[in-house]
Amino acid sequence: MARILITSALPYINGIKHLGNLVGSQLPADLYARYMRARGHEVMFICATDEHGTPAELAAAKAKKPVAEYCAEMHEVQADLAAGFRLSFDHFGRSSSPENHKLTQHMAGRLKAAGLISEVDEKQVYSIADGRFLPDRYIEGTCPNCGYERARGDQCENCTKQLDPTDLINPRSAISGSNDLEVRETKHLFLRQKAMRDQLRDWIKSKKDWPILTTSIALKWLDDGDGLQDRGITRDLDWGIPVKDGQADWPGMEGKVFYVWFDAPIEYIAATAEWAHANGLGDEAWERWWRTDKGAEDVRYIEFMGKDNVPFHTLSFPATLMGSGEPWKLVDYIKSFNYLNYDGGQFSTSQGRGVFMDQALSILPPDFWRWWLLSHAPESSDSEFTWENFQASVNKDLADVLGNLVSRVTKFCRSKFGEAVPEGGTLGPREEKLVADLTEKLRAYEGFMEAMEVRKSSAELRALWVLGNEYLQEAAPWSTFKTDPELAAAQVRLALNLIRLYAVVSQPFVPDAAQAMMAALNCTDWSWPEDVGAALSMLPAGHAFTTPEVLFAKITDEAREDWQTRFAGIRT
Image (cartoon, rainbow, N blue to C red):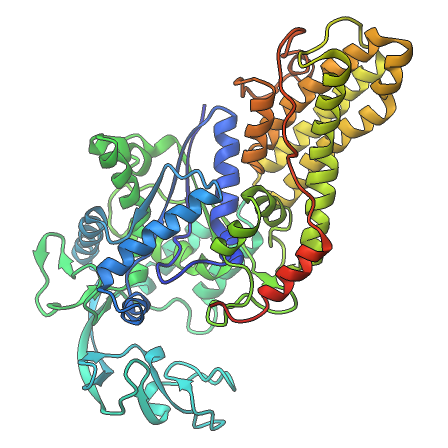
């Protein structure tokens, strides 16, 4: 039994995420966690809401709520949606937790002691009306390059020119609209990543099995242009983790907080501590996952994320852990994803374009979404959601292949033999070939799941379902029954056991359907079919079952057209 630590990128707190966010980290991480548990391994699957930074403050202000109250409410919303999609986190924490405050401050103190923190005086724009320093993106004005009147202080989205706030003509606060701005000096802390460049490069290059997408992004940040730069880890904000040197005050840093991208990855560790404390366990329970001097030396640690998060997880977070000088567990494998686009364009949170998690669950069960998203995961390149493709995939794969097999077998058995596994008859060469073919496909499926090849795994799973359908077509127990009811009984007995096998191996992809199949079969044995032949005789003659409701209702053209129109515009 292996010990596997799994983290998925933390969803940001300011709003409900769309399907592109879901498939970029949390959903494939859940697939892998479910599979590894099914194979008998010890799994710790951790996620949390990422709650600090200016966007959280602004979202709270827009909602007319104190930021702490807003974040608490949105955490519950996101936790409920995660449960709705059957994401099987061992703990879904909060980056604002006391555990993360303590650990982030501890890490900063360790980095300071190691000489890896520098104090830098910077000039930043201060809004007198807002009473605060403004991050570059919260300063708007006219672009000096193209004349666009709503250019931001970091970039003009019209002509894409990189800008500094002082470049803007008639700059104003994006928060209040005030142009009563001035440049003030402020001191910030920087993580001296540049000093760790060689150490980070050696570590990244030692990861021979990482996806090309992950490694190429990391090395680009490490070596392109001027190479890896030191990174600011503090901000002039009210909401966040106060800057401290461990438990001590940090002179000159009063009123400042740690930058959200410094504390967010540390929350992976802190959330595991939250899990331990929530379950009445001591620190040793979480330390055995994260400290190599406390038992984590035999842990395999996998991170799942979209490609935009790769630089922080291959450079900044490892620099924090390495630089602390403490024996923290470093990631073993980073599974990164490209982007999922929406129907000829991009998902857009600001424009409400595309399907968001709450909307998805309001129109269809989670298995429909899980299957399509995972079977079209943007692994080697960006992929695109279209309603036509979604409808075809659900109807053909789930309804016609898996759902149809379950329905045909259980209904036929009920009509000819009653609602119990029939007895009698012996199986022959056709069934031996089925066992051999199933075994070959199952081993391929296992291999792709181990390797986190999501789309290939889904293709092999579908191929397993197809084998059962082809067997039924050839054996045709409904015809055999007329001439040899004993043989038909044996074929149906095999097919009922095949439904159980499908439930077990399909559970990582479609957990609700798998549960429904097992409930119909009156079976609670979820043991993995290491020996396919033995698995196909697990339910004995006489074992009672019920005929389930339709597992997957087909999507009609009318419904598809309605949804296509409904989710094309502005989210209300």
